[in-house]
Image (cartoon, rainbow, N blue to C red):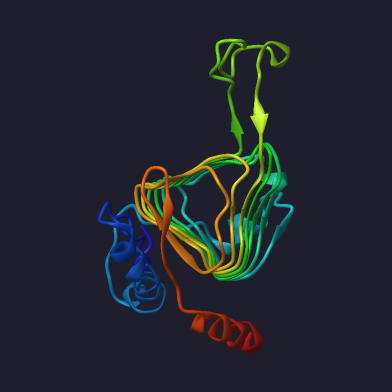
Amino acid sequence: MILGRTSDVGNGGPAFSLRALSIFTDIHGILRHDVRNWMTNYRADYLTPDALSSMPFASLGHDVMIHERVTLVGIENISIGSHVRIDPDVILLATGALIIGCYTHISAGVFIAAKAGFEMKNFANIAHGARIYTINDDYSGEHLMGPTIPSELRGVAPGAVLMQEHANIGAGAIVLPGVTLAEGSVLGALSLIGRSTEPWTMYGGVPAKPIKERRRDVIRKGQQLLESN
């Protein structure tokens, strides 16, 4: 057991997205810089730097925290920047390219199927239990469905998913193939989205619709943080 590190398993809970996301960054910062200095934890172990460096990532930055209960499939296809945290029970299926930028966070229970490619750029975050898909079966009845079916009998439609800088996905949200979450856009908790978003706009609902615009102060603050490092 490691003393001093913890994971925000309850981060971003199933409350309405705007409130959940408003506390997302604060919780992340508290856990990363303050709580781990004094809390006693159980089953909260993160992989050591030596363990991470022994894995065949496509690339790996520094200050990377990956919980030991994270499932990684296709490590050779995974590129990770610096200052990244991935919490317990995350599943990353990197049968295609999976790229994680700097100062990013993937909260507990997130599922990403990256067969057609997935990228989250700097300062992007994914809250608890969100699901991201880059392929979709044909539900028309023309083709057989499921991973046990030979590929020539399936009608799979691929579509890479991209999270631009400062994009955020709320707890329990679902992102369908081919979506680009534009710079600064937010997808609220428990929402479902199948179309790309406009920059600096909050979305919520099933299907997700635009709610309001966001401030852009974080652009300057993020640039300052990158320059300071």
